Image 1 (spheres, rainbow, N blue to C red):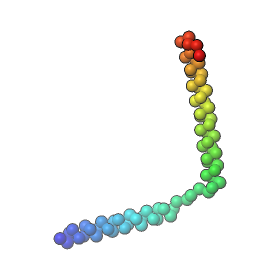
Image 2 (cartoon, rainbow, N blue to C red):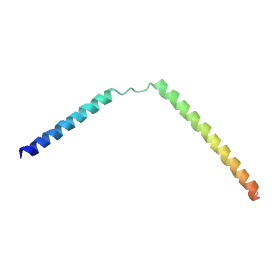
Image 3 (cartoon, rainbow, N blue to C red):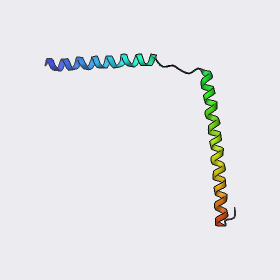
Image 4 (cartoon, one colour):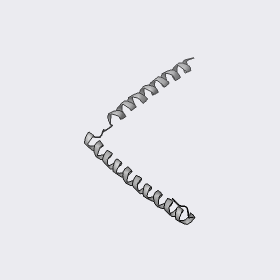
Length: 74
């Protein structure tokens, strides 16, 4: 029976150590400044718009090319 009690204690010790380690890791997080967030957001939105326009142009060009080859009026 003493062996089961030791296992329980070890589980609680390891759980406590886990949560202490989590707390210490959370303290190391460096959050970006609002200025950096807005700058990165601008870059992301710009890239999304550029890629969207590229895909739109590619799609339109391929549709027109397909219509030309198939002789479909559109």
